[in-house]
Amino acid sequence: MKVLIVGGGGREHAIAMAVSKSKRVDKIYCAPGNAGIADIAECVPIGVMEFDKLTDFALKEKIDLTVVAPDDPLVAGAVDVFEEKGLRVFGPRKNAAILEGSKAFSKDLMKKYNIPTAAYENFSDADKALEYLESAKMPIVLKADGLALGKGVLICNTLEEAKDGVKQIMLDKAFGDAGNNLVIEEFMTGREVSVLSFVDGTTIKTMTSAQDHKRAMDGDKGLNTGGMGTFSPSPFYTKEIDEFCQEKIYKPTVAAMKAEGREFKGVIFFGLMLTEDGPKVLEYNARFGDPETQVVLPRMENDIVDVFEACIDGNLDKIELKFKDNAAVCVVLASDGYPLKYEKGKIIKGLEKFNNSEGYYCFHAGTKFDEDGNIVTNGGRVLGITAIGADLKTARANAYAATDWIEFDNKYMRHDIGKAIDYAE
Image 1 (cartoon, rainbow, N blue to C red):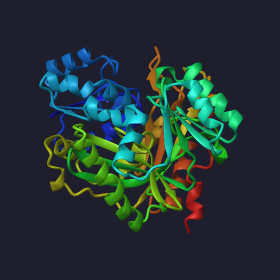
Image 2: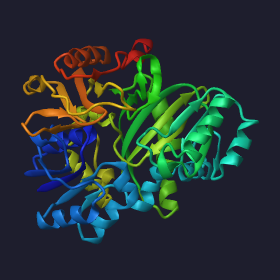
Image 3: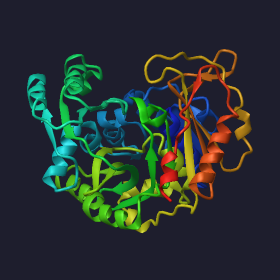
Image 4: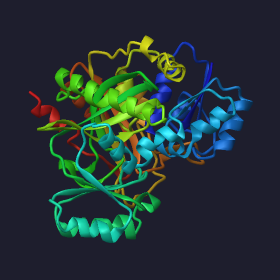
């Protein structure tokens, strides 16, 4: 069969790698793809929001299955457009992708269906938001309602910071229209855990757990990014916590979406906080997480195409998800200055060292070919260096060792990815 993957980052590279292992797949296309994905798929110069061009291509090439991976096209209704053209596609429809597309919607859904989350208020008026802050307890969390590339969340320690945050989001439009509405949320403390899940509208099957590192600098300092590294599994996500989340969070979320007439088929990402009062939902995403996918999929034993199709057809209950009894760590190599200003076009050396290295992966996030055929940097996050190990500490040591294989000007990374592993003993 022929598969089209929509997207062009590290997540899509990891999905393409998983799809390439399927015995059912003869040909993979990726739109727009990147220099790394080009090794295993034919890259097509079509943007993720060019729905007509994407569907025309799928019809012309007789694509059997399309996987829409990024948040923007999902929230904008890419799946609906594919379905209208009679094309088979994996991902939530527009009315279900709102689970990620609007934080106000998701918070209201959790309140209505008693799904554990932080206390909050929604605001469409900046003055009312500022007035609310006067009597609010600090620290406090401000969230732009819409999509903001994983960066639309501000943690404010003082009233002054919170007021400035409201100005940034709602008045200065630091995140564009995503800040037209604002969620102000109580600050929760505890361990963060990410759990990805496959959903077929009724049944939910969770993948192995992971933990992301959002801040740009060591010690969880600096600005929020799209993710600077991750590890899997989380040693803090115990069997007891999983059982609680299955019954109080995962299944109720899928049932709530169905009850609201927003049947969800695809991947739901649960961002959890393990608080003293039990696990609570920090956020939902309506797709594979990035970079969590880069440590979860290399550990999955199933043929991913079988799972995609089971979600589409409502047969997920017949699939048993299997993951290897090992661990994975991903360290993101970024361009110095990310997530603000950074230079592109730097030649990347050392990529060939991953070609025959079992258990080591180099997922391309922001790369392209230059006019001379060199692979060069083309984004803030450039590569995700992932390594497998028998346990988390071994995987971490392997991943950091492999970061030395890669060289490019203005290479930057965090040096404490997976530090929490040391506290789990």
